[in-house]
Length: 313
Length: 237
Image 1 (cartoon, chains in turn blue, cyan):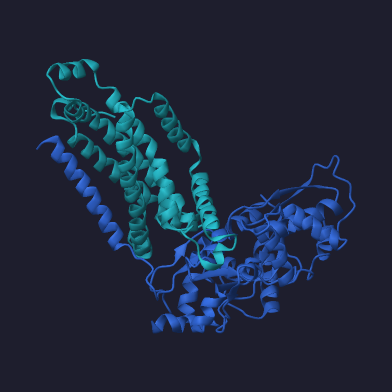
Image 2: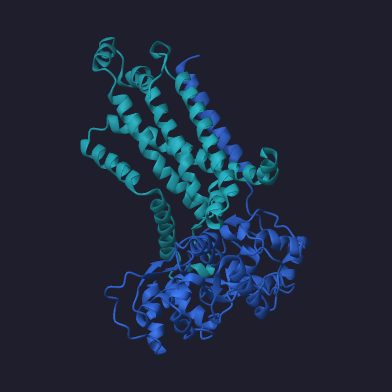
């Protein structure tokens, strides 16, 4: 066979395979709902697998997976129809989105609270008092506002946190650590809110205690932070009560916030020698989020409505 | 245990491997369709400066970290949307999708260009000038020299370029999971985010196997496209 023929054959094969791939790949058709979730939501028991089991529906086209930072814009621009939002995310307001009501109580409450090693707390018992300053003082809308400043205005978490503390007069007056060998390491997961609350705590400790504070924010997902805390790579980070209950303790959903808190507090102390300090106030629950106009057009208010819509199509 | 693993992850692996092949193959084809003609053109053009400029551009693209290139592509698409639709474009939906396959394939194509371009260029340039002299002496036209002497001799090099690009693209495509393009990167990211070793394996093993298969197939093609007179035990590249 001549070389020319061989080249043509190969070119032809490539084109045919491309055509096959394009034809075979699922595409979003007009009516089908296209969902997009972040990586963690796909594997958590209180995430995608549990949700579709609890509400008994299945998306026609498989949900996309993307970085949490990209989901909101993808939703707002109409590339996808549903995402797993966080209740305290400022972009829900900014992008004119709506969160779906969890009418069958699938998601537990996720109140944020500092989670600290017992060892660290024994070494610095003042920490509990210092962090009491912000306990129950940051509600959902305050957190949304802080998050929005970072996500949309591109401000640094450190500046946002410092400004917030100054505004409320919570900033301490401790001089910067001179010779202290001891340091406290503050961790955080990889998203905006964690960076801000991490900075809040780091700045509070820095300005009230004479120790140096190291920041290890943006550390990845829940299990990475939790394991780092257990192994002593970090001293504290902010965890969410529901995440502790479902994702770490692998218990069943409880919907009463206080019950969730006391449950995780007891269990963490007993099993892991970790202490839950007082919650910060806001409940950053997972919610399914849609574009306001689109949800209204389809008459979808709750997750059950969405399930019904998907089944009906 | 393997059976259990496959039972649990079989469907996930299947879906994501398909998406992975989709991303890789389409990027590779597009890349080859751009880089091979461009490479041939560069060996023939009289503007030597142009050669330098284009080669440098391709080189620079290659030096950008893959993750950054992906992020840059997404940002570039957002800028295009903003220019086309104003600052509030995302309320109405943009001109082009800023997440998903389109930006992913764009980044992959850019990345896969250089090896093919460079190998095409050097493949043609390395043809022995004595052979060209002989061809000219035999009265061959420029066109005949191109198609009957230079290209056949350069083909193994070109295919080696495509092969390198293919293996790279398979690796790089794992990052496309970050921007909603799917692929085996999705499984790896779940593993990373939730500290799940099983997910990591479910993403990594198929990606490695895929790279091996592509490498094998491409080297077969490479051999098949080498003129019989040039075939050696080892092949070229």
